[in-house]
Image: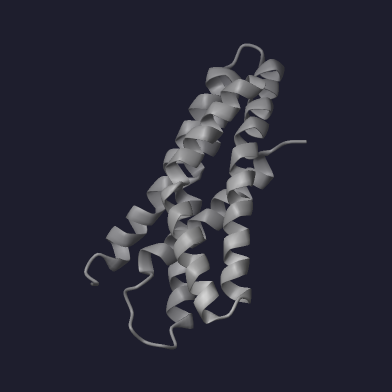
Length: 170
């Protein structure tokens, strides 16, 4: 099994949420569904562009390797190690989102403040844990390189979207 597809889907979902976070709180209108969707699509577009960097890095590492089969195995092992901490993090985010959408207003607000707020702050440590997981799972330096570039890419989506579309708001 190659972890590339789940990692890409996770990165794109994170990019859409990053677009939403860049927009969140900038509009006092009650009905703002179109704006929320537009913000998520902007994050997704920026994420697609930025996530090309780790894809290209993995391709270059693989093509430049003297033993491509061994390098592919290392990148796959590193990808699995990278995916495990992110899967735990994504599960916590999904549980917090489920609580937000299912619970009554006060409880859902508490779920937002107690769950999603701190989880947003834990994104960089989650990426560091994923990079560490890539190395510890046998991915080596090539997996660490690809993982660090992927982590930088997903962490840059929100600032890019904010700077491009929402910097004047507030």
